[in-house]
Image (cartoon, rainbow, N blue to C red):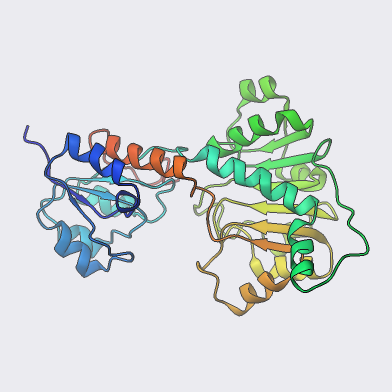
Length: 321
C-alpha cells in the first residue's frame, strides 16, 4: 500500500518542531499548517484536497468539509476529547478515526491538585489583595491533608489524580458510571452515588467527558446539594456547570470557592462569565490543563500513531456516548 499523504492542521507541530521531524521520518510527504490558528471550512477543504489523512487538533470537521474531501480516508486526532467531531458524519463517509484517551492525564491531574491547594490557602484572593495594596488582617487557610475529596468521573484523569493525592492522606470518594472496583481497593477510594458525593465532599473535582449526559449536569438544583462551604474544581469541560448558578452561590458563600479551567463559551465573554471572573473566591485559568510541554508531546505522538491505528467510529459508542 502506498504511503498516505498527510495534511497536518494541528498547530502542535508548529510549536514543537521536533515532533514535525518525527512525523516526517515516517511520512516524508506530510504538509503542515503554515500558521492558520482558526481554520475556516474553506481553508480546510483547500488545504486537505490532496490528502489521504488529516492530522488534526480541535478543528471542526463538518459534513460540508468531509463531503468536500473525497480522497480523505482517515482523521488522526491530536486532542484529548473528540467532542468537536460528529461520529455520524464520519461513519456516513466511511472516515476512520484515530484517537487515544488520557494522554495528557498527568498534566490535568497536576493542575487540579494545584488548584485545590490554591483555593484552600486563598492564594488567588490574597494575591489580588496585594496587587491592590492590601495586607490582609487574617491570612488563615486550610490544609489539603485530611480533607474529603470527591472525584466525579474516575477515568484516566481521575485515576491519575487519585495517585497524586495519596501522600496527602485525604479521604477519597469517587462517582463514575463504571465500577473500577480493583482500582478503588488498591488506592483506598470509596465509590459513592452522586447524592453522597455531593453531600460529603469538602472538595469536589469534576473529570467528566463532554457528552449529552454531562452537559448542564450541574444545575442550580444540583449545586444546592453540595456540602455547604464546598470547594469546587472543574478541569473537565465548560458547560457541565451552570455558570450563572455558580456565580450566585459563590457570591453568597454557599460554595466557598471555585477554580475553573474550562468555560462555555471559550474564551469567556458573556456578562455572567465576566462577573464570575471578578469574584475574589473564583479562580479562572484559560484551559491550560493539558498545556504542559510534556503533555503536548504525548498528544502529538498519539496523533502520529493514530494515522495507522484507527477505525470507523460508531455513534453512541465510546467515546461518542
